[in-house]
Image (cartoon, rainbow, N blue to C red; front, top):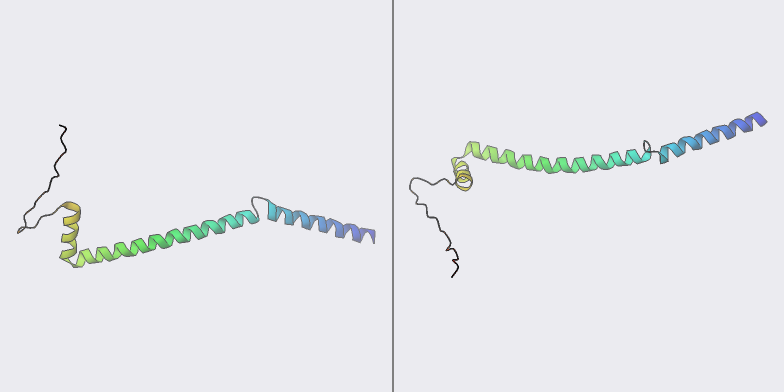
Length: 98
C-alpha cells in the first residue's frame, strides 16, 4: 500500500515536472508560439511578394506583346523622344540675390 502511494506520488511529481518544463522552458510552449507567429508573418510577406510578382509578370507579358508599353516605359524611364516629336525643357528662373 505504501509502495503504491509512493509510486503514485513519484509519478505525479514527475508529471508536474514535465508539464512545468513544457510550459515554462524556452524550448517548450513559448517556442511553439514564437514559431507560429514567425510562420504567420512569413505567410503575410509571401502574399505581398506574390502580389508584386503577379504585377511584374503582367508587365513583362505586356512589354513582350505590345510596342506601346515598351515605348511608354522608354519615355518615362529613359527620356525617349519620338522622331516626329519636339522636346521642350522648361527651366525655372533661379532666384538671384539683389
